[in-house]
Length: 275
Image 1 (cartoon, rainbow, N blue to C red):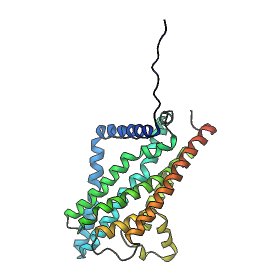
Image 2: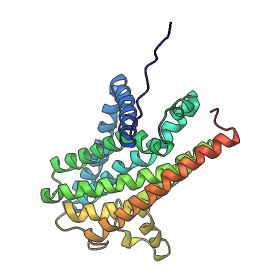
Image 3: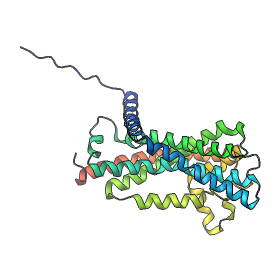
Image 4: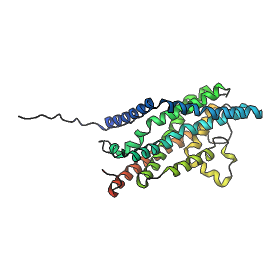
């Protein structure tokens, strides 16, 4: 008696990309349903900085232009934070639970993993930034509605660039099991160098040049020019900011996924990974 086994259909590269992204998004959606209070608290938490800036401006009798400037900068930082740190957090969690190897045995290119792992958190980070700006608008922040579509494009480019930076940190974690201090230091530096709460022109000249090495600077500058009628005069024009962000996104993402893929292969040769 002969047994017939079903033949496995080969998948195209496009199908592999779709299945990988869909799988990780499905995992994230399951976690969202299991812990809804965590998601709700994330959105409630960003209301408090908006209220803080609103009451500060009201108490000091300052024009609301400063209020909207601070809101836009803080919203961008909050929106890009998940894209920057979510991958490293997820890898740490997988290594602690011993499930990292189960991700790697799937028949998909390893270079897809850092991108697919971060799709949902990048999306929710963008929603968080939009929610923060919306709360500021409800409180009276003058937002230019005509600039919203292009500002979403700018935010998307910033998210892609931060995903790439997160891939470098993830490669460090794979090889050395530690990476949180590096990511934390970079996150703190972006709040100062990116000009979230003040124009970068007030920074000393000896450190101001570092502001142009991080994507946050261009995202914040372009978003302010698009959403604020009388945006701060310093910073690049929107077109230049978008062009630089495109270069950041393409170059850093290609380099980031390549470095992450190489780090996994090196970790396997060194015996760090049990596959």
